[in-house]
Length: 332
Image 1 (tube, rainbow, N blue to C red):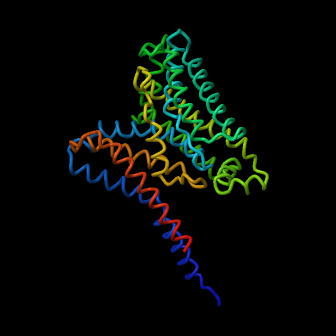
Image 2 (tube, rainbow, N blue to C red):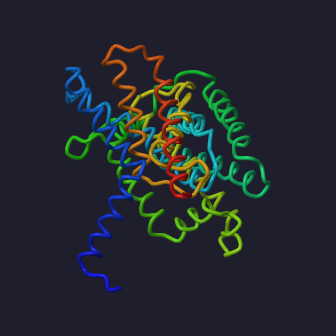
Image 3 (tube, rainbow, N blue to C red):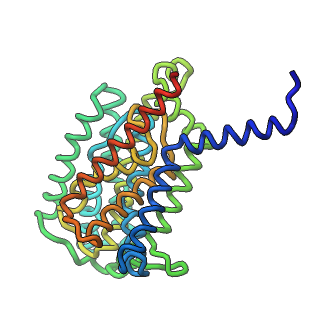
């Protein structure tokens, strides 16, 4: 039977709409928009320039780490150490600059610290067969302990001769009044999206998450890529640590506490599958946006902040439920 041009176009449009409506990320975007509209009418403070500026800036710290976590989760892994790695990297930067070294040396030391931690995690997981949960849970404790040792568990708020440069790096707004952290997030999201969509490395990551055994048989260097994704995850935490240090203007050993939950939540809510094989950069940012809107709304609506964990946990469960329903429909 011949198929007309109109039928072909209609079929493509139907397929696009089906994919869109079946996309978890799409519904999270709708949820963020509806929440913002509701809060704009329900409160006088939400839609103010100051509050929106703070929201967009606060989103970036979780979102940047979530971009790195996306690589790990796509491979079917998990990284529970990101909050502590952020703390250690922030402390390395602060202590190095406090000792009189320039910002370039501080950033280099921070990045090297993150890469070493990521490589350590990746080698134990990929080459020695340790479970990712166990390795990164152990690193969660180790990294925060090292941060306490490095600073003698004190607050560091003087960053040497380049003190002002660091504050401008994290707290400035160099382009059209947009907070610098937001610009960094956009740039890193574009790099992440391009890597996952258009590079061989990205295709290999998706292949490992889809079927690791099949990926191995087709010649994908599974072990090396696993090490690389844990290095990327730690690096993203290190970058977020640099930015957050400049934004806060001080570093304590409590920075990043509990951040791993928010990062994993943002990634999963944004559409990544904990079983592996699925995840996007845009989804990570949208998930982080929803979490921040929830956090911000609690205070504006006069709700006890202790409910934050309940809302975030509920959002994770809903995201997983959505994914399960979608898989059941595909199997039918």
